[in-house]
Amino acid sequence: MSKPIYLDYNATTPHDPEVIAAMRPHLEEVFGNPSSGHWYGAQPREAVIQARRQVASLLDCRPDEIVFTSGGTESNNHAVKGVANAYRHKGNHIITSRIEHPAILEVCRHLEGDGFEVTYLPVEGQGMVRAADVAAAITPATILITIMHANNEVGTVQPIAEISELAQKHDILLHTDAAQSLGKIPAEVDTLGVDLLSIAGHKIYAPKGIGALYIRTGVKLAEFMHGAGQESGWRAGTENVLEIAGLGKACEIARRDLVNNGNHMQAMRDRLYEGLKENCGKVRLNGHPHQRLPNTLSLSFYDREANRILENISPEIAASAGAACHSDTVEVSHVLEAMNVPVTWAKGTLRLTTGRHTTAEEIDRAIEVISEAVRR
Image (cartoon, rainbow, N blue to C red):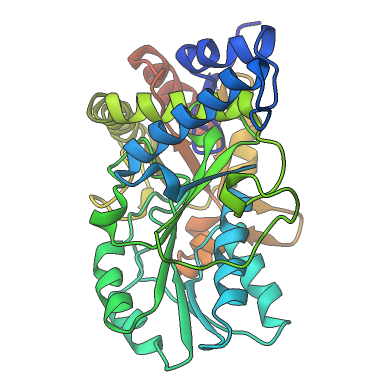
Protein backbone atom coordinates (compact mmCIF):
# COMPACT_ATOMS: atom_id res chain seq x y z
CA MET A 1 0.00 0.00 0.00
CA SER A 2 1.42 3.40 -1.00
CA LYS A 3 1.49 6.26 1.49
CA PRO A 4 -1.49 8.63 1.57
CA ILE A 5 -1.03 12.05 -0.05
CA TYR A 6 0.04 14.43 2.70
CA LEU A 7 -2.04 17.61 2.91
CA ASP A 8 -1.51 18.40 6.59
CA TYR A 9 1.65 20.54 6.52
CA ASN A 10 0.24 22.97 9.09
CA ALA A 11 0.21 20.10 11.60
CA THR A 12 3.85 19.22 11.01
CA THR A 13 6.41 18.96 8.21
CA PRO A 14 8.88 16.26 7.18
CA HIS A 15 12.59 16.81 7.78
CA ASP A 16 14.31 18.58 4.93
CA PRO A 17 17.26 16.51 3.59
CA GLU A 18 19.59 19.48 4.17
CA VAL A 19 18.38 19.65 7.78
CA ILE A 20 19.11 15.96 8.25
CA ALA A 21 22.60 16.45 6.80
CA ALA A 22 23.25 19.35 9.20
CA MET A 23 22.20 17.22 12.18
CA ARG A 24 23.99 14.02 11.20
CA PRO A 25 27.44 14.88 12.66
CA HIS A 26 25.80 15.54 16.03
CA LEU A 27 24.21 12.08 15.93
CA GLU A 28 27.27 10.19 14.83
CA GLU A 29 30.44 11.99 15.95
CA VAL A 30 30.06 15.37 17.64
CA PHE A 31 28.74 14.68 21.14
CA GLY A 32 30.41 17.19 23.46
CA ASN A 33 28.72 19.63 25.78
CA PRO A 34 28.83 23.14 24.26
CA SER A 35 29.56 24.54 27.72
CA SER A 36 32.74 22.46 28.02
CA GLY A 37 35.98 24.38 27.59
CA HIS A 38 37.91 21.47 26.08
CA TRP A 39 38.23 20.16 22.51
CA TYR A 40 35.01 18.14 22.59
CA GLY A 41 32.92 21.21 23.41
CA ALA A 42 34.28 23.37 20.60
CA GLN A 43 32.31 21.94 17.66
CA PRO A 44 28.98 21.78 19.50
CA ARG A 45 29.51 25.35 20.73
CA GLU A 46 30.23 26.55 17.20
CA ALA A 47 27.14 24.71 15.91
CA VAL A 48 24.95 26.58 18.40
CA ILE A 49 26.56 29.90 17.49
CA GLN A 50 26.03 29.25 13.78
CA ALA A 51 22.41 28.21 14.28
CA ARG A 52 21.70 31.36 16.27
CA ARG A 53 23.05 33.41 13.37
CA GLN A 54 20.91 31.47 10.89
CA VAL A 55 17.72 32.03 12.88
CA ALA A 56 18.57 35.70 13.38
CA SER A 57 19.19 36.13 9.67
CA LEU A 58 15.68 34.88 8.85
CA LEU A 59 14.15 37.34 11.33
CA ASP A 60 16.63 40.14 10.50
CA CYS A 61 17.63 40.59 14.12
CA ARG A 62 20.73 40.23 16.29
CA PRO A 63 21.89 36.69 17.14
CA ASP A 64 21.96 37.51 20.86
CA GLU A 65 18.21 38.24 20.65
CA ILE A 66 17.50 34.55 19.88
CA VAL A 67 16.87 32.04 22.68
CA PHE A 68 16.49 28.35 21.82
CA THR A 69 13.53 26.53 23.40
CA SER A 70 11.84 23.15 23.17
CA GLY A 71 9.28 24.42 20.65
CA GLY A 72 6.51 26.89 19.94
CA THR A 73 4.55 26.07 23.09
CA GLU A 74 7.50 26.81 25.36
CA SER A 75 8.30 29.98 23.42
CA ASN A 76 4.74 31.21 23.84
CA ASN A 77 4.72 30.32 27.54
CA HIS A 78 8.05 32.04 28.11
CA ALA A 79 6.94 35.18 26.28
CA VAL A 80 3.53 35.62 27.91
CA LYS A 81 4.34 34.45 31.43
CA GLY A 82 7.71 36.14 31.30
CA VAL A 83 6.23 39.54 30.47
CA ALA A 84 3.36 39.09 32.93
CA ASN A 85 5.68 38.39 35.83
CA ALA A 86 8.40 40.89 34.90
CA TYR A 87 6.05 43.83 34.27
CA ARG A 88 3.39 43.18 36.85
CA HIS A 89 4.44 46.32 38.68
CA LYS A 90 3.26 48.30 35.62
CA GLY A 91 -0.10 46.58 35.18
CA ASN A 92 -2.01 43.32 35.00
CA HIS A 93 -3.89 43.52 31.69
CA ILE A 94 -3.17 41.39 28.59
CA ILE A 95 -4.84 41.60 25.18
CA THR A 96 -5.11 38.59 22.89
CA SER A 97 -7.60 37.19 20.37
CA ARG A 98 -10.16 34.40 20.41
CA ILE A 99 -8.43 32.55 17.57
CA GLU A 100 -5.00 32.06 19.15
CA HIS A 101 -3.36 28.67 19.49
CA PRO A 102 -4.08 26.90 22.83
CA ALA A 103 -0.43 27.57 23.75
CA ILE A 104 -1.51 31.22 24.12
CA LEU A 105 -5.12 30.85 25.24
CA GLU A 106 -4.38 28.36 28.01
CA VAL A 107 -1.50 30.48 29.30
CA CYS A 108 -3.80 33.50 29.45
CA ARG A 109 -6.47 31.49 31.29
CA HIS A 110 -3.83 30.36 33.76
CA LEU A 111 -2.76 33.95 34.36
CA GLU A 112 -6.38 34.97 34.97
CA GLY A 113 -6.29 32.64 37.97
CA ASP A 114 -3.24 34.55 39.19
CA GLY A 115 -4.88 37.96 39.22
CA PHE A 116 -4.35 39.08 35.62
CA GLU A 117 -7.12 40.44 33.42
CA VAL A 118 -7.28 39.26 29.82
CA THR A 119 -9.27 40.70 26.92
CA TYR A 120 -10.04 38.13 24.21
CA LEU A 121 -10.69 40.13 21.06
CA PRO A 122 -13.26 39.00 18.48
CA VAL A 123 -12.41 38.61 14.80
CA GLU A 124 -14.40 39.60 11.75
CA GLY A 125 -15.89 37.00 9.41
CA GLN A 126 -12.64 36.32 7.56
CA GLY A 127 -10.73 35.67 10.76
CA MET A 128 -8.92 38.98 11.09
CA VAL A 129 -8.37 40.99 14.26
CA ARG A 130 -9.36 44.63 13.82
CA ALA A 131 -6.78 47.16 14.93
CA ALA A 132 -9.67 49.36 16.11
CA ASP A 133 -10.69 46.63 18.55
CA VAL A 134 -7.15 46.45 19.86
CA ALA A 135 -7.13 50.21 20.38
CA ALA A 136 -10.46 50.10 22.21
CA ALA A 137 -9.23 47.34 24.53
CA ILE A 138 -6.09 49.17 25.71
CA THR A 139 -6.18 50.41 29.29
CA PRO A 140 -3.57 52.07 31.53
CA ALA A 141 -2.95 48.58 33.00
CA THR A 142 -2.19 46.90 29.65
CA ILE A 143 1.34 45.45 29.58
CA LEU A 144 1.17 42.96 26.69
CA ILE A 145 -0.60 42.39 23.39
CA THR A 146 -0.17 38.89 21.94
CA ILE A 147 -1.68 38.28 18.49
CA MET A 148 -0.59 35.45 16.18
CA HIS A 149 1.06 36.37 12.88
CA ALA A 150 -1.10 33.97 10.88
CA ASN A 151 -3.84 31.59 11.95
CA ASN A 152 -3.05 27.89 11.81
CA GLU A 153 -6.56 26.80 10.80
CA VAL A 154 -7.71 29.28 8.16
CA GLY A 155 -4.40 31.00 7.33
CA THR A 156 -5.53 34.61 7.78
CA VAL A 157 -2.53 36.92 8.22
CA GLN A 158 -3.06 39.46 10.99
CA PRO A 159 -2.26 43.22 10.74
CA ILE A 160 0.68 42.96 13.15
CA ALA A 161 2.48 46.08 11.88
CA GLU A 162 -0.68 48.15 12.39
CA ILE A 163 -1.16 46.71 15.88
CA SER A 164 2.50 47.47 16.58
CA GLU A 165 1.92 51.18 16.06
CA LEU A 166 -0.73 51.10 18.77
CA ALA A 167 1.50 49.12 21.11
CA GLN A 168 4.42 51.50 20.68
CA LYS A 169 2.19 54.56 21.13
CA HIS A 170 1.07 53.24 24.54
CA ASP A 171 4.42 51.69 25.57
CA ILE A 172 2.99 48.15 25.51
CA LEU A 173 5.01 45.07 24.57
CA LEU A 174 3.87 43.12 21.49
CA HIS A 175 4.33 39.38 21.03
CA THR A 176 3.40 37.33 17.97
CA ASP A 177 3.21 33.57 17.53
CA ALA A 178 4.86 33.05 14.13
CA ALA A 179 4.86 29.25 14.19
CA GLN A 180 2.72 28.99 11.04
CA SER A 181 3.97 32.00 9.11
CA LEU A 182 7.72 31.42 9.25
CA GLY A 183 9.08 30.07 5.99
CA LYS A 184 5.86 30.91 4.14
CA ILE A 185 5.74 34.71 4.27
CA PRO A 186 8.26 37.36 5.39
CA ALA A 187 8.56 37.73 9.17
CA GLU A 188 11.27 40.30 9.84
CA VAL A 189 10.85 41.56 13.38
CA ASP A 190 11.47 45.25 12.64
CA THR A 191 9.00 45.24 9.75
CA LEU A 192 6.39 43.64 12.00
CA GLY A 193 7.38 45.88 14.90
CA VAL A 194 7.24 43.09 17.50
CA ASP A 195 9.13 42.77 20.77
CA LEU A 196 8.81 39.00 21.01
CA LEU A 197 8.26 36.31 18.37
CA SER A 198 7.81 32.55 18.72
CA ILE A 199 9.19 29.87 16.38
CA ALA A 200 8.35 26.15 16.15
CA GLY A 201 10.94 24.03 14.34
CA HIS A 202 8.64 21.25 13.17
CA LYS A 203 6.56 23.70 11.13
CA ILE A 204 9.59 24.62 8.97
CA TYR A 205 10.99 21.16 8.13
CA ALA A 206 13.13 20.90 11.27
CA PRO A 207 12.59 18.34 14.07
CA LYS A 208 9.90 18.36 16.72
CA GLY A 209 11.06 19.44 20.16
CA ILE A 210 13.01 22.51 19.08
CA GLY A 211 12.00 26.14 18.74
CA ALA A 212 13.17 29.65 19.45
CA LEU A 213 12.01 32.88 21.00
CA TYR A 214 13.06 36.29 19.71
CA ILE A 215 13.44 38.80 22.56
CA ARG A 216 14.12 42.38 21.54
CA THR A 217 17.08 43.98 23.29
CA GLY A 218 15.87 45.83 26.37
CA VAL A 219 12.82 43.63 26.99
CA LYS A 220 12.82 42.02 30.43
CA LEU A 221 11.35 38.58 31.03
CA ALA A 222 11.00 36.61 34.22
CA GLU A 223 13.28 33.57 34.14
CA PHE A 224 11.48 30.57 32.70
CA MET A 225 13.95 27.76 33.46
CA HIS A 226 16.20 27.99 36.50
CA GLY A 227 19.56 26.30 36.47
CA ALA A 228 23.12 26.78 35.26
CA GLY A 229 22.44 29.85 33.13
CA GLN A 230 22.68 28.64 29.53
CA GLU A 231 21.23 30.78 26.72
CA SER A 232 22.64 33.95 28.31
CA GLY A 233 20.64 33.20 31.44
CA TRP A 234 17.29 33.20 29.64
CA ARG A 235 16.80 29.43 29.58
CA ALA A 236 18.82 27.02 31.71
CA GLY A 237 19.61 23.47 30.57
CA THR A 238 22.23 21.87 28.34
CA GLU A 239 21.53 22.92 24.76
CA ASN A 240 19.88 20.44 22.40
CA VAL A 241 22.73 20.79 19.90
CA LEU A 242 21.43 18.18 17.46
CA GLU A 243 18.10 19.90 16.94
CA ILE A 244 19.44 23.42 17.29
CA ALA A 245 21.68 22.68 14.29
CA GLY A 246 18.63 21.40 12.43
CA LEU A 247 16.57 24.48 13.25
CA GLY A 248 19.40 26.74 12.12
CA LYS A 249 19.66 25.00 8.75
CA ALA A 250 15.86 25.04 8.36
CA CYS A 251 15.83 28.82 8.91
CA GLU A 252 18.66 29.26 6.41
CA ILE A 253 16.66 27.30 3.81
CA ALA A 254 13.47 29.22 4.63
CA ARG A 255 15.21 32.52 4.00
CA ARG A 256 16.99 31.32 0.85
CA ASP A 257 13.95 29.73 -0.79
CA LEU A 258 11.13 31.83 0.66
CA VAL A 259 9.79 33.19 -2.64
CA ASN A 260 10.07 29.96 -4.63
CA ASN A 261 8.57 27.83 -1.88
CA GLY A 262 5.75 30.30 -1.29
CA ASN A 263 4.89 30.44 -4.99
CA HIS A 264 4.88 26.66 -5.28
CA MET A 265 2.69 26.10 -2.21
CA GLN A 266 0.22 28.73 -3.39
CA ALA A 267 0.04 27.25 -6.89
CA MET A 268 -0.75 23.84 -5.41
CA ARG A 269 -3.27 25.29 -2.95
CA ASP A 270 -5.08 27.24 -5.66
CA ARG A 271 -5.14 24.24 -7.99
CA LEU A 272 -6.78 22.23 -5.22
CA TYR A 273 -9.30 24.97 -4.46
CA GLU A 274 -10.35 25.43 -8.08
CA GLY A 275 -10.74 21.68 -8.60
CA LEU A 276 -12.87 21.21 -5.49
CA LYS A 277 -15.05 24.23 -6.31
CA GLU A 278 -15.70 22.80 -9.75
CA ASN A 279 -16.51 19.31 -8.52
CA CYS A 280 -18.22 19.73 -5.16
CA GLY A 281 -21.00 22.26 -5.65
CA LYS A 282 -21.58 24.18 -2.41
CA VAL A 283 -18.15 25.05 -1.03
CA ARG A 284 -17.25 27.84 1.42
CA LEU A 285 -13.74 29.27 1.75
CA ASN A 286 -12.83 30.17 5.34
CA GLY A 287 -10.27 32.88 6.02
CA HIS A 288 -9.24 35.97 4.11
CA PRO A 289 -9.24 35.37 0.34
CA HIS A 290 -5.98 37.30 -0.18
CA GLN A 291 -4.27 38.05 3.15
CA ARG A 292 -3.77 34.38 3.84
CA LEU A 293 -0.88 31.95 4.09
CA PRO A 294 0.05 30.68 0.63
CA ASN A 295 -0.37 27.04 1.60
CA THR A 296 -3.57 27.05 3.67
CA LEU A 297 -7.02 26.07 2.43
CA SER A 298 -9.90 25.80 4.90
CA LEU A 299 -12.99 24.61 3.06
CA SER A 300 -16.48 23.90 4.34
CA PHE A 301 -18.81 21.55 2.51
CA TYR A 302 -22.47 22.40 3.08
CA ASP A 303 -24.38 20.03 5.37
CA ARG A 304 -21.62 17.43 5.37
CA GLU A 305 -19.69 15.95 8.31
CA ALA A 306 -15.95 16.46 8.26
CA ASN A 307 -15.14 13.30 10.18
CA ARG A 308 -17.20 11.23 7.72
CA ILE A 309 -15.32 12.80 4.81
CA LEU A 310 -11.98 12.07 6.51
CA GLU A 311 -13.02 8.46 7.11
CA ASN A 312 -13.69 8.08 3.41
CA ILE A 313 -10.51 9.74 2.17
CA SER A 314 -8.07 8.55 4.84
CA PRO A 315 -6.69 5.61 2.83
CA GLU A 316 -5.46 8.10 0.23
CA ILE A 317 -5.40 11.59 1.82
CA ALA A 318 -4.00 12.90 5.13
CA ALA A 319 -5.79 16.10 6.20
CA SER A 320 -7.43 17.68 9.26
CA ALA A 321 -11.00 18.47 10.25
CA GLY A 322 -12.34 21.77 11.56
CA ALA A 323 -15.19 20.11 13.43
CA ALA A 324 -16.11 16.77 14.96
CA CYS A 325 -19.65 15.43 14.67
CA HIS A 326 -20.99 13.01 17.28
CA SER A 327 -24.36 11.31 17.59
CA ASP A 328 -26.09 14.35 19.04
CA THR A 329 -23.53 17.18 19.04
CA VAL A 330 -21.19 19.06 16.75
CA GLU A 331 -17.86 20.28 18.16
CA VAL A 332 -16.75 23.22 16.02
CA SER A 333 -13.19 24.53 16.34
CA HIS A 334 -12.80 27.67 18.43
CA VAL A 335 -11.49 29.48 15.34
CA LEU A 336 -14.56 28.76 13.17
CA GLU A 337 -16.78 29.55 16.15
CA ALA A 338 -15.06 32.92 16.62
CA MET A 339 -15.56 33.63 12.91
CA ASN A 340 -19.30 32.86 13.30
CA VAL A 341 -19.27 30.21 10.58
CA PRO A 342 -22.80 28.68 10.56
CA VAL A 343 -22.91 25.13 11.93
CA THR A 344 -24.37 23.77 8.69
CA TRP A 345 -21.10 24.86 7.05
CA ALA A 346 -18.67 24.52 9.96
CA LYS A 347 -19.39 20.86 10.65
CA GLY A 348 -18.16 19.97 7.15
CA THR A 349 -14.82 21.81 7.34
CA LEU A 350 -11.52 20.37 6.17
CA ARG A 351 -8.11 22.00 6.55
CA LEU A 352 -5.97 21.15 3.52
CA THR A 353 -2.42 22.48 3.61
CA THR A 354 0.24 22.11 0.95
CA GLY A 355 4.02 22.01 1.31
CA ARG A 356 7.29 22.20 -0.55
CA HIS A 357 7.00 18.61 -1.69
CA THR A 358 3.36 18.68 -2.88
CA THR A 359 3.05 17.80 -6.58
CA ALA A 360 0.43 18.64 -9.19
CA GLU A 361 -0.25 14.91 -9.62
CA GLU A 362 -1.00 14.60 -5.91
CA ILE A 363 -3.33 17.59 -6.04
CA ASP A 364 -5.25 16.22 -9.02
CA ARG A 365 -5.70 12.86 -7.29
CA ALA A 366 -6.76 14.62 -4.08
CA ILE A 367 -9.43 16.53 -6.00
CA GLU A 368 -10.83 13.24 -7.31
CA VAL A 369 -10.81 11.49 -3.94
CA ILE A 370 -12.24 14.37 -1.89
CA SER A 371 -14.89 15.22 -4.49
CA GLU A 372 -16.07 11.61 -4.59
CA ALA A 373 -16.25 11.45 -0.79
CA VAL A 374 -18.22 14.72 -0.55
CA ARG A 375 -20.70 13.56 -3.21
CA ARG A 376 -21.08 10.16 -1.55
